[in-house]
Image (cartoon, rainbow, N blue to C red; front, top):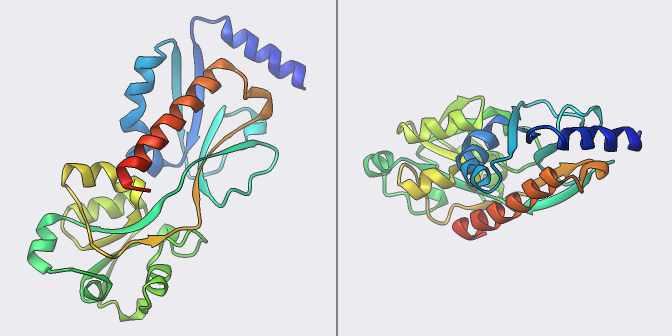
Length: 231
């Protein structure tokens, strides 16, 4: 099997450029990866990137993707898993919402706000939910006055940017909106998450030049992102 993979990799290298298939969840692609890919393309114009955005976890052994980007606890078997960066839970709202409903100066002020819930992370172990956030700050989720629910982190961010309320999100997903001023981070409301961002690759492909180039670029982008977020 290893010889067959090496033969396939060699045949890819002989084509006019190489195609690198990247698997990631849609929110990470939309909010973190895609806005940065132009820098990779400038560095490596000979590598064609194919993004496979799906909530389903791909099996790299099936050779449907070359690199998988995952946000998780790091328990990955039969692959090389490289930790790229940590993340944090933050509360964000639009400047208009804060002006109309503030001041919001800490966790207790959030309880009387409209809290936007991402239903996709309510029951996992990522701690990116209002229950875990409240526990971290010594508050009860039941004390939150009003809720509005969306099934996805990108929808949650857009709802916050539209002025619908306060959203609880991963800081990496909100990074560009915070930098542009479209969203503002609420003070003293951060919380930790036990999960982190990883790049997964089969051991047989780890030394394939396109994979090496992409992983090196990911490390640089993750370092840049951590510096921007203060992580």
